[in-house]
Image (cartoon, rainbow, N blue to C red; front, side, top):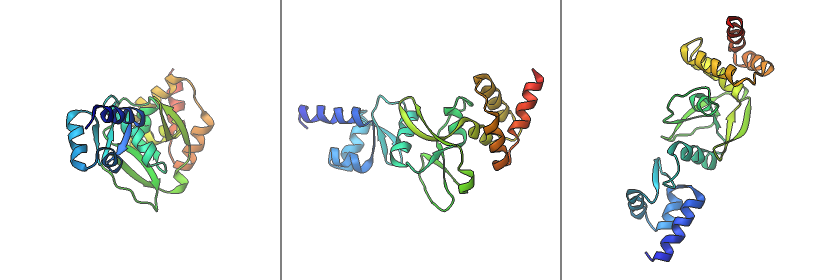
Length: 194
């Protein structure tokens, strides 16, 4: 490969940031060349046929893959809690919700099929330069309750939410009613302790 061609490729990788295998085959010519470039560190493999620029953080790169290639999903669960600052747990698969009638399989995703009535509180945020479709913070707190009802993970998330200071009682009450959670009850107990 000529030096000039290699510089063009490196510029494309830095600009686009994430790729799927078929896009890289178009750039490098074949699957074996893609594998070689990954071994040389010119690109990093994220798994499941997705790659990123080597300077990208793998978690952010995977979020960018989700945003680019799976626009119909909503980031949920432990991943949403982490993004909203309600959890410090390590995330090795991106939790996403899809409509119950859809199907999606991918090793970088932890897919949850949910009823349309539970896909509420969807918002878009910019997380470290990545535009994400995600549940809002109160909906994510309700999810924390569903994952760990009145357990330590939920209480840590609740305390972090309170510490952030932008409490939206109306949304919490709304989500409690629809999702059959008890976040408001525990929030009131948290304030009663202070």
